[in-house]
Image (cartoon, rainbow, N blue to C red; front, side, top):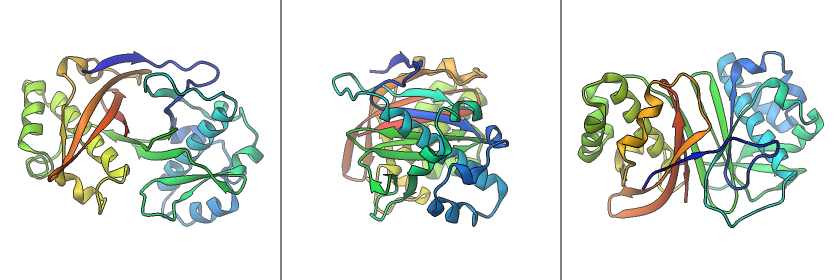
Length: 274
């Protein structure tokens, strides 16, 4: 059963799963070296293009902000899982000093996990962190207590062969019922499915895990289509999530997950939690 939740953040973000959204254009006035550690700078400067560097930087600053914000809060664990979305700006990043941002590192994990890891003052942390970039927007998600993944994608049309090869018959039928012949709806629903599958990959449940493995994954128990229409024509990312459960299948295996998504007519943001 899908449910709507308004997750408007207070001055301190709510408990549990937190998602931050930051547009790359907000970073034009930000000197990246002031917010990155030496290890992060070494990775940042070798990225091949300015657009890639901007997206990389925005995602990591979003994650650092979420982590620092959480340090100000008392932990709560007895409520239902609902993500909280906060939209960041270069001004909002100024809530913490550059020195504090440098103490929070978002680095590749040494394990087989596709997640990066958070390092605070030189020590690895247990929080789950996930990053994603699309359409000039970067997002970060920090989960507490269980693995959490985030994916953001732009809703664009693709060739028929892509749909046939990437999505199962049941998934394509679900899209056809919801689209009712409208291409905007079809593009949006297929992109939502893509974000769900990619989030499952990021949880590390499929091995190997790359976008070439998406056709092996099937999303079962998809939310009712009546919960989704509000996003198809929206021009602004809202703080309201549709939250539901879904089963992720790969061959003979299946796992139950919690999923939440929000979006605009062109952008879909999905969070998945084990």
